[in-house]
Length: 92
Image 1 (spheres, rainbow, N blue to C red):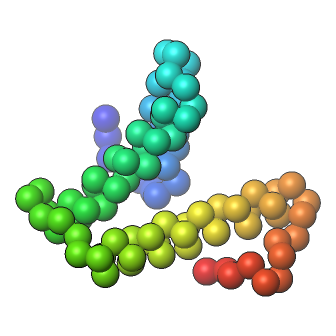
Image 2 (tube, rainbow, N blue to C red):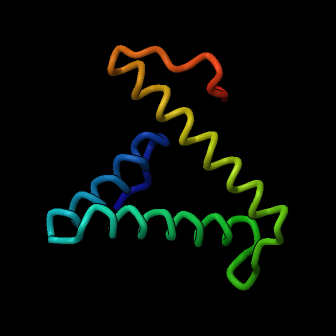
Image 3 (tube, one colour):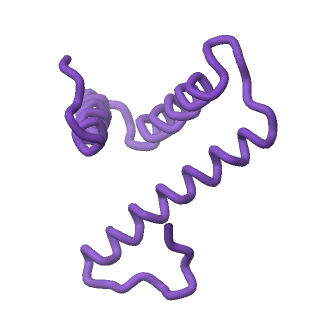
C-alpha cells in the first residue's frame, strides 16, 4: 500500500477496510467499535509511545479532539442534507 497523499485519502482507505469487513459478514456495530478502539490505541501510541499510557488529562484531551472531529462531520452531513446546523451547536 502506498502512502496516502491527503488526509481524505487516508480516511477513504480506513472506510474501505471497514466496508470490506462489513461485506465479509461483520456487523457494522462490530466494525465501528473496532475502528474506535483502533483509533484509541493508535492515539495513545502517538502521545505516549508503545509502552506508555495516558493520564486523565490526556484522555480528556483526546475526548475533546474526537468530539471536535465528530462535530465537523455532523455539521457537514446536515448541510449536505440541506439542513442548517443548530446555532447553539459548538463549531470548530
